[in-house]
Length: 204
Image (cartoon, rainbow, N blue to C red; front, side, top):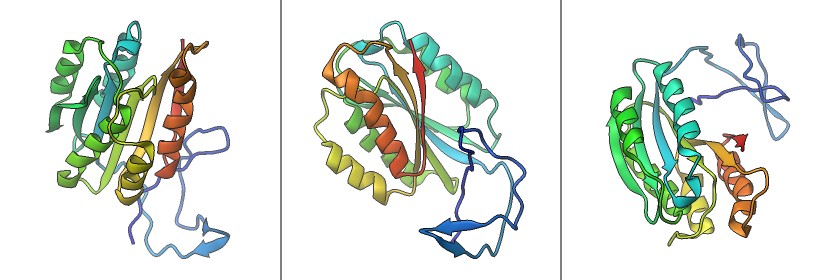
């Protein structure tokens, strides 16, 4: 089985320069590495971007780091964009054009509720036709969910079956006001950890 991995240290920093003699353990059992390649493999990246009312004042600082990341990507990468408010919407299907993604970002205006679980479910669907072997979802959200028809349990079941790694950029308030806002960081952390990904918090 071929597995794409990103290795981080205890402080969350990416570990570079790994060699074939690196040891991998699964539940304390050492796994044999038959082939090892250290390269910047192309990815199919689906971006799930929160455009709900709770993102007022957060949109600008949320989209800028994403666009900067895309500008530094592998030329063979491809991207899709799903927006979240009362319901998720596929704003851009898979494309290699960063400009197309950026143009869609500039058009979004915050408003409505947050159907985060529905957006994760929808974001996994385009991955079925993704051309690259490594598939990643990036959730950019304050992680509040207050309008999904899918439940957390239903979405987690689909996430576990999908061959997609999930990362999250959490835009959190220092003093969350509602129960949904307080639960937000746990939601993003849980969905990312199920797939071996992680959450990168930004506090305001």
